[in-house]
Image (cartoon, rainbow, N blue to C red; front, top):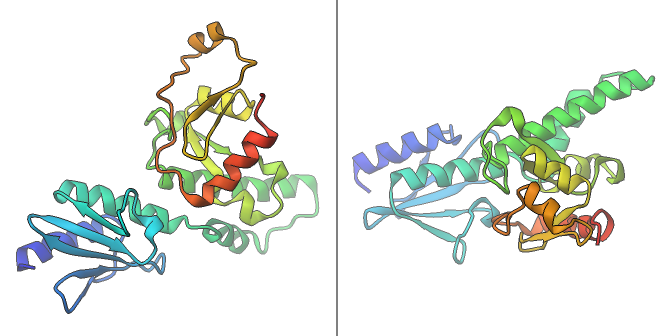
Amino acid sequence: MTPLERLRLEKAAADCGFERTPLLLNDGGLELRSAQFPEVVLVHASGGGFCVSASTPALLDGADGGVLLVADLDKLYATLQRASAVARTMPNRVADQFRHGTLHLPQTTEAERLVVQRVGQNLFRNALMDYWQGRCCVTGLAVPALLRASHIKPWAKCLSDDERLDVFNGLLLAPHVDALFDGGWISFSNEGKLIVSNALQAAAQIQLGISNDWQIHNVKPAQISYLTFHRDNEFRY
């Protein structure tokens, strides 16, 4: 790795959330680290592009055998931004923030309990905005003020704060998609493919703009149990 390549990589790492000084490896690669999470990402220059791997494979979308080949610096930025977002929102991390932030808040009255619940809901929304990079995970809509933090397994049916605040139990959705999903008019397969209820007439589907192209990309294994719950308990067959 040339000094210029290393400089560019270090800047990309810092810009994408890996703020700790990268560690130079014996084979010439860089180990990218952050104070916000324990996972690390390894980057090696390779034929004008980059070879990226991670201590936790779930950080990298589309990695083949745990390794992702990235063609240029722009794509490396996108890869590192996504990896750091996933790492910040790994299971239990949002719930741990919630428990820490509400430890000393009173919860005696209904009003006090609602305040605590809003703290959790705000943390959950922020985590989904981070994880889904500020875009509806189905339509790609990128207007943050319009996006809804939707639970796959509803808040009231979750058995613990870890479930309620698990980023993998959430979808960031455009308002009309959120209403359809929350009402059980649509759901998604374990591969992320759209399923439309037979109870929703074809004319209504057209009026609502439902498209066969709607899909959740890069469904993670941790999301599958929640999607299964939605199909089994919330979806209108």
